[in-house]
Length: 324
Image (cartoon, rainbow, N blue to C red; front, side, top):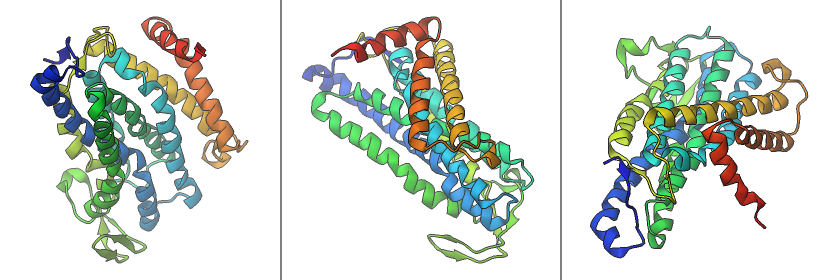
């Protein structure tokens, strides 16, 4: 059953008879989903270096802004993501946010097959990679409800710790996947290294064929089955303390999408303030700390004034800040 109407993990009898098995199943689907989120969010650090090694026709300073775009966007998306479980349920949220990671992963693979791809395409893909950063907030919130307080710390530690291992996994997997045509003709043609590159197995000399597009495509091998497991293996907890309103998947996905879109608007405004004019910034070069404060305030304000059920629900949750 996807929806759990009864959930009382502080009751030892319920925990041992039913709760533990369900909680562990949700945890072990959540961990690799979060791992992929971190990997897709932060893979631009490796991709941009390899783009330079392959001679992509963009200035080095412009390429390295892709990491800043993904970083600020991911941080911004954590704001709405912290509300997703309450509004939409854990299963609906984790399935949908994991599935969303396929968009930047597939798009990055396609864009990297051609060195004439316009730079703005990579900027959009870096923006969409922020999905992975936002997923941390919803994932941790979801897992906290599945475990009793006596083991909650361990569960959250496993989710966060092994999920963060996505950074290490990405640093190992991407360089190795670039060394051979993993996807055959579907993956596209190789490119020739103009500068030496490196992996865990040693240096790869200039003149070697490289499949940089695999840096994006490789994650589809994990994300597709994880979305399947998330949909068929995870649960929404439908209690007053967790997700009391039973919204269907379509409405839940629509609510998540609208909240993410609003947060993207805030993130784009913040990036416009801090990026150099050469990469479509304002040229103001506002200090990052000030820009981040503006982005947070703007995101919270825009989410609060959403008309309908979202704004009403968030308005009630924001009342906590009025308590002294």
